[in-house]
Structures are given as C-alpha cells and as structure tokens.
Amino acid sequence: MEYSEQRTITVTAYPIRLSVRYVEMFSKFAKQYLANNRQGIKKRDIQDLVNVEVTTFHHLEYFGLITRYGEEQGNEWHLSKDGEQFFAGQEPVFDLIAHMDGEILPLNHECWDTNKDKPKLTMIWEIMKQSQREWEEYTHYKEIRKSSFQKKLF
Image 1 (cartoon, helix red, strand yellow):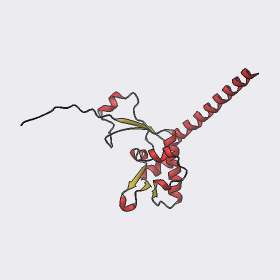
Image 2: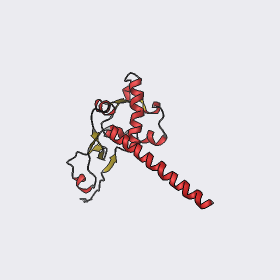
Image 3: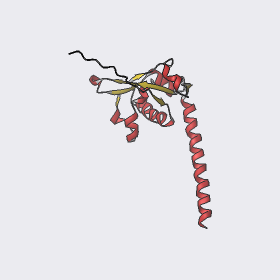
Image 4: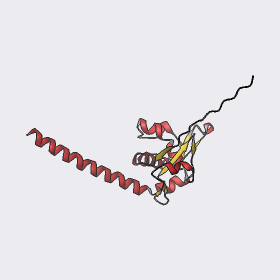
C-alpha cells in the first residue's frame, strides 16, 4: 500500500521584551552571583525571586545575560561576560528577542517583518529609569484616584 500526506505546519515565533521585571530579576541574580565569588547558583537558591520570576528566569539566557551549565554542574546559572558588562552599565543588549522552537531568531529573520517593534540596543539604566518613571506615574495616578474618591465620600 502506498500512502502519502501533505500537511502544513504553522510554527509561531514568540517575542520577549527585556522588561523592567526581567531587569530587576537579573539584578537580583547578578548581585548574588558577584557576592558569591562568581560561583554558579541553582535557580531555587536565587534569593528574593517570586514564583513567576522562577518560572521565567531562563528567559534571561535568550538575551545572553546568563548561562546555564548542564547536569554535571547541577544546572547552575552563571552570569555571562555580556551579562556582567550589561550589569555594570558598560555594554548594551537588545531589548527584544524572538524565539521559535527553542531557538533564538536572528535579526534578519523574516518574522521581524511582521512585528511592529524592532529590537534595539539598550543599557540597563535606560530600563531602570523607565521603572522609576512608571512608579512615579503610578503613585501620582493613585493619589489622584484617592483624592477624587475621598471627595465623593464627603
């Protein structure tokens, strides 16, 4: 019996932005790693990570900020050379990556033609400055809502 099929498989590229949350998570790890004499750290031993950060911690590897060493090292995470320079404010990294089937897609991949945002180089302080601005905007908004709520009560 001779049988053949023709199938179309759609594979999706997923973008990940180097957000404030990722940079804060990265900073926690980098501080602990450097204070620990550059010894590898298992994910469960990284201090002050909340559950969602533990789940998404490996995304930092996509940006080239951290590296993982295999089972013979107990799956320990290390700060990469690029990660150390980024943390020190000496080198930028791309603020947006795309991955598909576990692979990071190059900047010339056709998927970028369909995405409205394009990757750009950014420094750690630019992202952290954004965090401060967002916090100030949030607290200002919160104060406005609080005062308008109090006016409605009285």
